[in-house]
Length: 241
Image 1 (tube, rainbow, N blue to C red):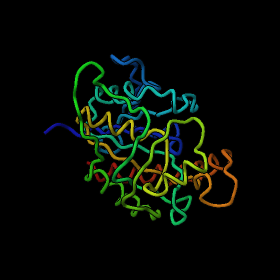
Image 2: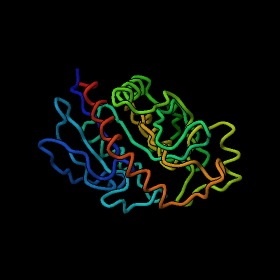
Image 3: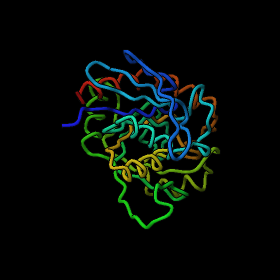
Image 4: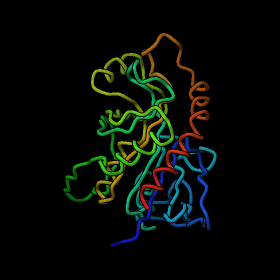
């Protein structure tokens, strides 16, 4: 049996740091270019981890400029056998309040989704791994977090937030909205690597409530969620030994 190597893609709530033992930066360029940052490889307890901050150091890469193909390929090159991601999202339902965690079981991507198959016909079936989803939900409960065990993630392109009209449409079939997860999940499926995401709900999407949507408030909620997000990911790793 191949050793467990967990790739972690850190989103806005997790930031560009996740504490590892014997950590080493891995400088590599993939066939699809360079990843957002050199992945850092080390140990968390008995688990080998490859950590990649999605937006790079100091959150310098905006969502519409992310090289998802390079990011996922880099994790594959470094031996990741499964991938956990964290993603900042807006709520499409009044019942899903900021501070909640959602572990999606499905997603929708209306706009351009990257692929590794530009030059031949391959129809991969994208999915979110049920085993990893179960681990994330259990870890969130261990951490005493408010968590929803399923939900539909709707991906937009960014960097702008969604209009009221768009949100009114999305809320009829989605639960949370973000800018990255569908791309990553699709590429992970093409690579044959199980993938699941822990979504932090950092705001109500535009028009769901009467309060104005202000990005500085979103960032404030992300910072509040950061410690609990790290705790949940750490507890998930303990369950993947």
